[in-house]
Length: 273
Image 1 (cartoon, rainbow, N blue to C red):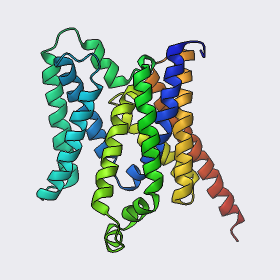
Image 2 (tube, rainbow, N blue to C red; image 1 turned 45 degrees about the horizontal axis):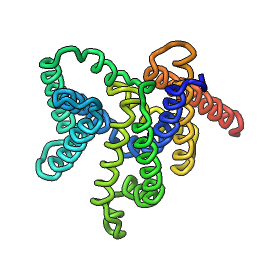
Image 3 (cartoon, rainbow, N blue to C red; image 1 turned 30 degrees about the vertical axis):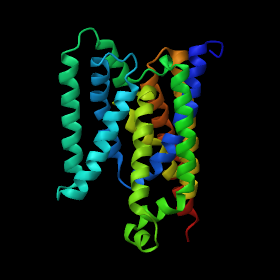
Image 4 (cartoon, rainbow, N blue to C red; image 1 turned 135 degrees about the horizontal axis):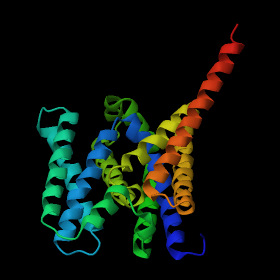
């Protein structure tokens, strides 16, 4: 396993992207942005289609441009319309997917590419992809730690954050950019359909095991790392698809956390007078 260059690149990509997905997921779940990340991920399908239509050998840049456009269009619509956020998300998700399918229908011989981006293909990660993933992951981790107290206050009480002098709008923009970048890169890990699970499940697992937000961020980081690396290794050994393998490992950790939480609650009930 460790003598194959493609497998080493896949494991490094998992090390870079899994933990930062878990870390971001803590704030995604706390701020109820899971549907937002799902919309950004599905909009990447249109980016893949446009990239291939324009003749790009690697449509990652096109994916990123379209995903960012959808993310910032959502922010603009939230500020300039009276529609609810979930309505806007449903509108943008369905429109971008429909656009991507229409463009793909005009392309011939790209069925394999569609499946690759829908379900992930971490084993095809190249050296340049690895460098981008590493740089983005380190940068976003640094920003999240730098903004930790501000993001915590914004998540708990946005009006109080405004009063406290925190630049809420700029931090929201930065968080949106970070989330869009990671979602787009993580598509290579687990695919468009499953990418939201890499944000949500480690955070949910960490919440079962933690008593405060700091513990939750550390636990989510570790669960994201273990899930990404464990799922990649399991897919190689068992000859399973990599993306679904990572998600199944995530789900296994979540079930274990539920059992631990249940056992912990049961022991407290026994100790109660």
